[in-house]
Structure formats: C-alpha cells, structure tokens
Length: 589
Image (cartoon, rainbow, N blue to C red; front, top):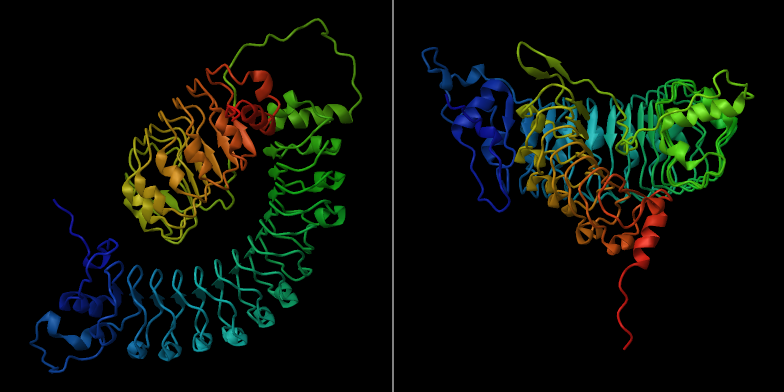
C-alpha cells in the first residue's frame, strides 16, 4: 500500500514556485489546532491562515451540517510552522491567533516582526533562527508565557533591556549574531536553563550572569572573551563551552556541584590554577586542547569522576605521577606535546599504558621474581587513538514491538549504535536540532539523501558499517565538525567532505582508501585531524606537507615506503616538514 504524504510536509526545493494553501488544509488545521506550511516557497502567508479560527463569511449553525461545515466545533490554532519559505514579513493579523503556543518561522527572510506578536500571550516557543533580524523588538519581551526563544543566525548587534520581562524564559539561543555585549538585565532571567551565545563578538559577560541559579548549559564559544566574572551562584551548571576565545586562565566556578563538562580548548591558557581545579569535583569531561599549558598540577588527581581529559597541542613536558591513580580516566589525549619524561612509545599505547607508567614512577621499583621471562612481541595492525568523545549522553530511543521508537524529537544527541540497522529510521530526519548522530556498528550500506536535512549536525559517527561512500546532500550539513568513517568499505575519502569547510576531523582508518586528495584537503581550512591509518595508500604526495592546519595526522599501517616509519613516529609536524622538503622545486631561470 502506498503511503499518503501529509500535504503540510512537502519538501520545497530552492527556486521552486510558490504553492498555495488549500481550503482542505485549512479545514484540517481547524480540526487539529496545528498547521504546517514548511518549505512551500511562500512569499507571504495567505490571509486565510490568520483567519483559520474565524467563522466563514456565510456561516450558519445547523446540526445537520456535514463535518467539514461544523466550524463551531473547530480547535483554536496552537501550533503554526512556517520554516523554509521566503517570508519577508508577517501580517499584523497574527493577533487573530491568540491561542498560539508554538510559532516557528526559521529559515526565512524576516527583517522585523509585527507589533501584534506581543498579543500572543499563550506563546511558549518562538523560533526565529536563520532570518535577517537586526534588532529584537520590545513586543517580543512582553510575552509572559515564553519559555523558549531562538534567535540564532540573525544580524543582532544589541539586545533590549526589556529582555528582563521574559520571566518564564528557560531557553535562549543567541548564537551566530553580531552581539558585542549582553545586557546586565540578563541576570533577571532566573528561570533560564540554557544560554547559548557562541559565534558573536563578545569581549565580556555582565557580572549579573553569575546569578542565574537554574542555568544548566552555558555556551560562549567563538567570541573574544579574555576573562569572565566569578560564577559563584550557578549551582545547577552542568555544561560550559568556552572554546575559541582568548582566555588566559580557568574561570572561577564555585560551587560546581553539578558541573560535568568544561570545554576550554583553543584559548591562551598558560597555567592551571590548583585552587580552581580542586572545586570541580563532579567533572567528567575536561577539554584543554590547543592552549599554552606548560604543566598540570597534582590537584588534577582529585577529580575522581573525570573520564576524559584532552591536553592535545599544549607545551607539556611531563605529567604529575599522581595522575597514575586516576583509574576512572578512560581517554587521555596528549598528542602535540613535547613530553620528555614519558617515552613516546608509551604515549602511543594509549591511556591505560600512560597511567600504568605514572603509577610505576610513584612507587619505588621492587625486584621481580621472574626476571628471566621475556615478552613475545607479535606484529599487529596499528591501533588508532581514541576519537571524538561525545558529550551529552542523551537516550532518545527505545525498543518497541519489533521497531525502534524515538522518544524525543528535540534531542541533540542520538545514539543508535549496535542496533543491527540496515537503514535509518525516517523519524531521525525530523530531528532538526540534532547535533550528534552515532550509528556505528550496524549494517548500513548507504546513508539516505535526507541526511542533508540535519542542518544542525556537528558530529557524524558511522564507524563499523558497510559504507562505500556518502551522499552529496551531506554538503547541507554546514556545521559538521567531525566525521568518523572507520571500518567501512571506502576506497577514497568521500568527495562531499571537501565541500564542508567547517570540518575539523576526518577519521577514516581501517578502510580501503588508496590515495590522498591534497587539493580537496587544502580547501578545509580548519581541518586539524586526519586519520587514514590501516588503508591501502601506496604514495603520500609531498604537497600534503602544505596543509598547515593539520595538528594530528595518522598514516601508520599503509603500504607506502616514503615517509618511513622512523619519520612517522616523530609526530605530525615532523611528517609535514619532511613532505614539504620533498616538493619538487622549479628549475632556476
């Protein structure tokens, strides 16, 4: 039986003609209280939408009327979805829909909002992402029931002081705007649970932000923050993302009773304060990569819940022996440091070996009873280092009767690994806010083109499947930072990846890749990690040495002869320098 398509979910291709809104669709909305007009190429909202709850001009009451004519039994419209159109404005008639609780107009061309939006007193969720708003109108700040306000990917330069009137607000997303500051009234939003203001021009944060006692997630990455005010009242804080700023020290967060994740990578931190580390008792993930840290204090060993510690690309020469007792530590990343007190061969064996070595340095060596026993070393494939560590463990799926059930359409992390899947559930592609998708250890032979609909995706993990390539539609995932393709059937790095300039890591070890496309890689200006271990590469082009963004290049376990393993074990920079020296020079003129 052919499945019927809901007329409200027809995908609209760019440049497609505008589609009208049928009377049948409006009648359906009158019955359900919901109207979805996404991706229909609309240049304006048809007037009938605003009057969907109004009686028809020739209305009369007759108990013998057909179902579609019984207008008085209709439900007031509570949910209106208008994303992916070409709307430049919304009519003041929006005030005719006072029962609206959800209004979604993301991915349009709006430059302003109607004043009547302030009349939507029942509105709880307002999504204005990906528009052209240069200012937030005060009418929005008058919405007493608003709990979620998304303003990411606009042109905002300032926020009104009236923001403090949004007393019910729990989620505020200001990412990807042009904000140079945040109003001090921000501290009045005492119900705020999530605050995102990444990718702006912020050089400071108002001290009042330290009083947001219910805040659980704070994201301020990719700004110009050199310091932060003390966070002394953020009792509920669980996740803090401060990557890509200019911080010189770990921020003062106390008490940090619930803090599980602290991301401080890509800053200018030179010293770790022992006092500020010791109070982070609940920390599970600590990201300090790409700073200028010269030493790690002994107090790090007091973080007894810490499972993942990233110290990649710092100035470390050694580690405190007290870290040997951190048996709960699952991933310790040390690549890109000039470690002298720990042999490189130990570091390459991974976290367990490093911790074991540190323990041995803390306890005086005792004579071994079996000194004549030798260990037989058998050759084996080079083991890749730990890859991306997924932050929020969000369980959003469960087993139904013979099928997979997704429990949350708004989740940011979806883990479908090890579920024996040969195809992905179609509901996955309705999760527009999905940031991390893990589908490793399944039986996937391909990914559907619909993967391109996940425009918020930052991490895609498809390891241990049967993939031979990736769909071209993946190019639409413009926020993608990491792709894990290990243990598939790839014969080349999928070309579509070269069209995603945001990529920071490509993990493609243990495939059948036969060559390296330097031209494609050179176009990825922020690519820091490239793992091509255990493939079929017969030649490494010298031009790879010019890809200066690479910080972690893994090529062991391939059949090429040059560069030799003696060069590879010296680290990424040594390999790049070696390759660059082998680039043929033009003959003198």
